[in-house]
Length: 160
Image (cartoon, rainbow, N blue to C red; front, side, top):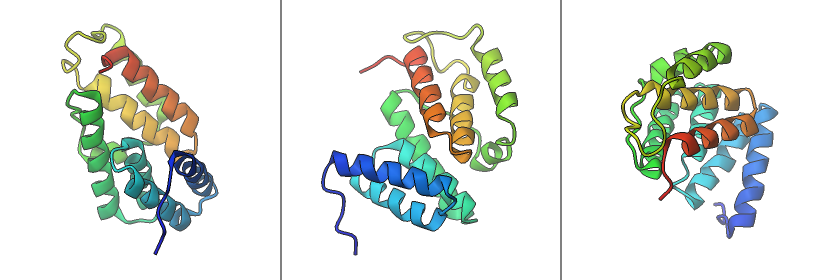
């Protein structure tokens, strides 16, 4: 049995290790690392997003769907606004083209409300960056995913 992560430094090191293992297509090992991360910090939606991708790579669709739903639930709690996403199956089926997702996102945000306005008015504004983030993570581009999601959060959600 794993001893558990003792502090944030170890958590950070494990996150980097897990990302490296994912990029090296060592999905079983990456899965173990990300499960440890989830045990240490069960409120980090990014961990569950990544677990969903890992489970997809391991062809465990049931576990992937559970992790995806948990990520959406946690994201909604963190942003203090409900996140209404497509079903898991719809989101995964649309991960084939980051260019198309980018085009849709730019179109959806063209006249979108800003932070403090009615951010729930157009769910595409919030669904698309999550899908794009998943696509970036699937390609091993974790920094791009994080930058996209942080930029979106800062543009549309007030900080507590």
